[in-house]
Length: 465
Image (cartoon, rainbow, N blue to C red; front, side, top):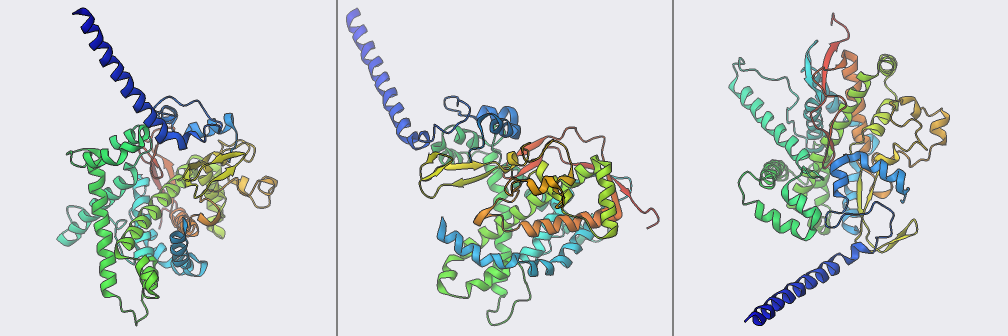
């Protein structure tokens, strides 16, 4: 009797070991392509979670530390066709034509500011940049940065518009901040970091769970997507291919391109157009808003920089130094992901096809070999006549990336930020609010965001105006 019990226990134990062995072999087979790059220098990964604990503990600060310790190891026809179509709207001649629309939005946003008040400038910057991208990309006035309506206003339509704008901006902010690449993200994102194969099925399951983060993210993105779909559908229905379009925006260029030939029309399907416009809305507003907020935060913290900036604005307009130094310290996209389209050797290490490679422009921008005293805010380090700028490697500062996939909207974004800085500092200066935490905390998602916002006090420069 006892012998039979022992034999049965051994059989169960053997079956369990066999199942575990099979499972282990399956995992080895699935992850073998990733292990091919195991010789690339880096910290020792923890089983199952890899390096996730480092990101959770240190945030973005972990990347400069890893670079310092381990060294600076440093698809395509569809993308090329699309890039060639839209590149024309970012030419200097076209950008110059967008200045009046940009200035109109900026001046309208400035009327929301009052002498002595405290503002969450990061929220205002999102409203402003979204209005600008609405005008420049879609020919649509979202009206988010218009002067706020109060309950005492007697126009019900105005109140409805104000409520709609508030709901839209809340959805927009939620959409740009909800996708987080750390342990504060949604459950499917966290599990997907551990076991990538479970990401999609788990997300589909969580979409059916009320109040789950995955369901809320999908709902908000769906609302914004439907809004973009409506804009695209209305413009497509109103378009007359035989007539020249009165619009010179992103969407009009895409719609005109659809009429050229059958292959382009197939490429630019209505669904693909909607996806492009939605992507343009997010990419064209969140990054610019973060950079503009960062400029005001840093300038208001450094009186000597503010004094020089005001002198430049009052005389002939600001140079690029303050903007570049701001982006060096607070880079909206400090990490860039690229997938190897073929087997490639980089720095002596072989990367198999389909390997994801993360580049870190934010680390390069704080390398003391290129930027002495990298934690200091010193705009003069970008003086074209200075020795530091002349000796610096041209790829040490690449906030918009480089090469054929460099951010296509970099000139658009820089122009918008510079115009905003000019108009704001012609009227006001800013000081840190006592209610703002110090140092600032950041969230790491699609782009970097301020965790609690940038809170500033507004001071009117010319009291008699």
